[in-house]
Image (tube, rainbow, N blue to C red):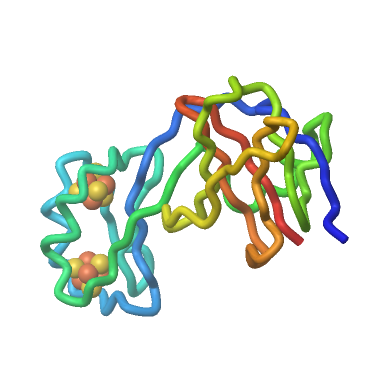
Amino acid sequence: MLKIITIAFLLMAPLSWIYVVDNGKCNGCGNCLSHCPQGALTMSGPDAYIDPELCDGCGNCVNFCPRDAIYKEWYTGIEEDEISEETMSFSQNPIVQGCVIVSGVTPLSEVKVMDRAGRIVVQNHSDQQGQLVLDMTNVPEGAYLVMSDETISVLTVI
Ligand code: SF4
Ligand code: SF4
């Protein structure tokens, strides 16, 4: 049987995209460093590193990486290791294992759930009462962004 909880959009954060270096692919060649107009790319140990506070998501550096090591992620300003703590501070339980009823948005809103790479993993449907529902049943464990227009919430699936 599905567990149904209600979430409200309590976290208001500007949505932005940044680019991230995949340490498993980067060989430290340094080709990308001089192609960031924001100065966000530096070397950190053997690999390149993108400062998330400086990256504006322009994507220019991707074109200069011969190893396809730079990829796009959403960014809320919340550090990875703070996500659990941040979500746990919500007044509604944000940890979901089944269906989620979304409140705080108009009935005609389109609500999407995105993974950290920006892939849409779930889109809302409406139940018989006209409530917006996100079926998180088959979503793998992890932190996800729930987005409706400019409004964002973070859900943790365990
Ligand atoms: S996406 Fe743009 S701002 Fe971000 S690191 Fe690459 S070149 Fe710099
Ligand atoms: S160009 Fe690619 S492989 Fe070379 S340092 Fe930059 S991210 Fe790493």
